[in-house]
Picture 1: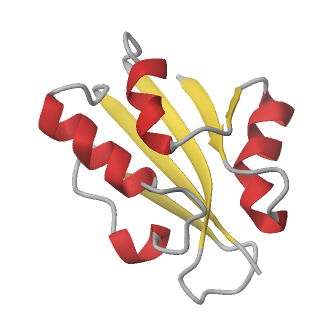
Picture 2: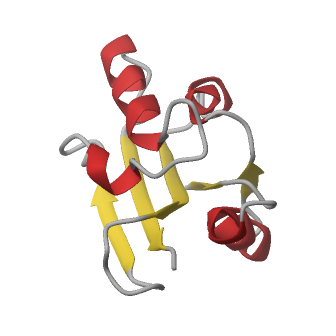
Picture 3: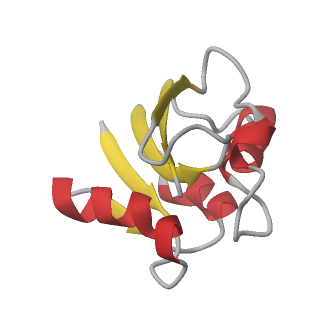
Length: 110
């Protein structure tokens, strides 16, 4: 399973996914999430890690199976990206380019 950490290291909590990827030997991804469709091409399983905002306490982890059902857009609504992770996953699904297994870990920011 390939790990992608999504975020912006200059936007405080938005760097959470990048930090995780760097610590576990994954791939930090600071571009627009829709670019993941090209980056994960050929992968059977991916783990996406990104900061989220649901109102839960900071540090709360949300585990979502993006293949089983669409990601809740509200969880990824507070994004510094033009299109967020949920948008990228749904675009990949519509294009038939979603890996067979996509697990998303959302880390609640402060």
